[in-house]
Image (cartoon, rainbow, N blue to C red; front, side, top):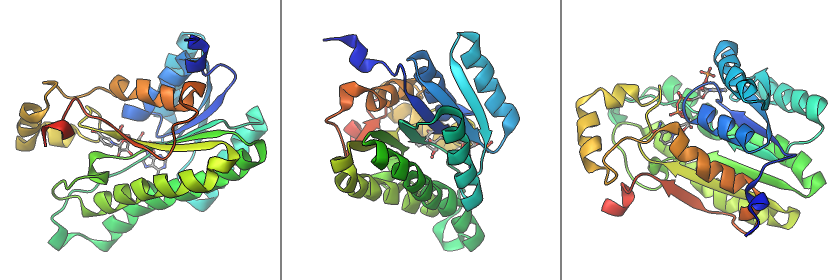
Length: 254
Ligand SMILES: NC(=O)c1ccc[n+]([C@@H]2O[C@H](COP(=O)([O-])OP(=O)(O)OC[C@H]3O[C@@H](n4cnc5c(N)ncnc54)[C@H](OP(=O)(O)O)[C@@H]3O)[C@@H](O)[C@H]2O)c1
């Protein structure tokens, strides 16, 4: 097989939440694969660290400060990218937050923050980008979902609702936009070592998780990056509407 079909040369990718964790891993891998990568998030200094890593190996990146839960933030992100690069080929909806509280005590303002970022922000940023992709009849949309998309995880009701919604949207958007040559897929990462999961890793549950992962370790952001590059590349052109679990065997264990 011609390995050029795995290349992102000539493509422009937006990765949200690209300053840390899984987003940083994906943005770096996409730049290594030849894409020009737009690094979006709320904290400029973290995004600049990712930018420095990418520039370090001769890759191309642009930092755009943006809050995906805010309508104006989403609009100015897409405008900035189109002004700079004139095209958007790949969107990775990775930005996400979580609040862990027993469902019986869950606060409405926490619910709003989690759902507005993880679900509403994802949908409306996707809508803006897709309008451009529909005009060009080309696009790859990748959501970073979760095991919570397909199974129960304790203490995270708003996160579960939002990630479940991302799973449903993956199916729905895939069938609406296939006619425009736009692929929509989700990656469901297992337990990956990032700032988001540090409190869990350091808690009692951290040891339980480690014992249950058949691979015998927590994942690293790089473990997700390969699947993201594949889903962004021409090699996956006939793959759409799928939830792809990358979890070191967790779900296979039942
Ligand atoms: N780690 C895991 O085990 C795991 C498993 C399944 C799914 N996931 C998902 O993977 C994604 C990345 O998580 P992570 O584990 O890499 O955690 P992380 O390091 O905390 O990354 C989340 C990123 O999202 C950005 N972000 C948060 N709210 C934002 C907003 N409103 N607008 C723009 N950017 C925002 C954060 O940057 P700023 O705060 O600077 O904006 C941060 O860089 C999330 O969607 C998460 O749900 C993670």
